Image (tube, one colour):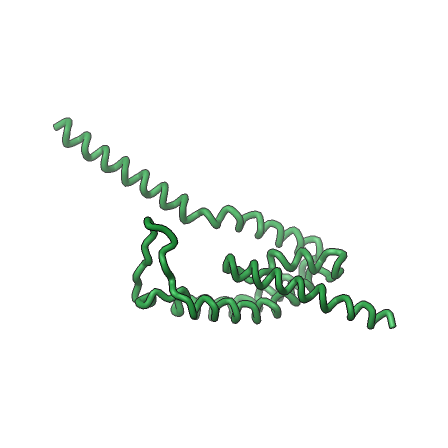
Length: 171
């Protein structure tokens, strides 16, 4: 009877975690584990870190397909007057999904995922939690890395132009 009681409460909680992971994960273009794994390992579910990671991977497989198909069915449009839609050989119709990149990432991701799972099985629960926290900590600032790199390049270009102009003026 106790097992039925636990199962009865797990389904609604799992539904809520799935909604959170699916909505937020696809909104920001990640699998959702950043949101769901901490919930799965909390007292609400009580999964071990390893169980939460494995369970999340199954869920991400499904939410990833759903999110990617929604992105694939919509077109990439500029969000501001200053933003342009980048035209590339694989983006001739302004599709959000860059199929050549997606296939390459999927193939190599599938190859290396087995290695990651094997390595994680050798780590303690504490080490897994610390590693996840470290990845999240390092990944957060990486979101702004392209902007920072562009600003640096623009600044360098501006400085080089000023130096070139001052050399011409000084001649």
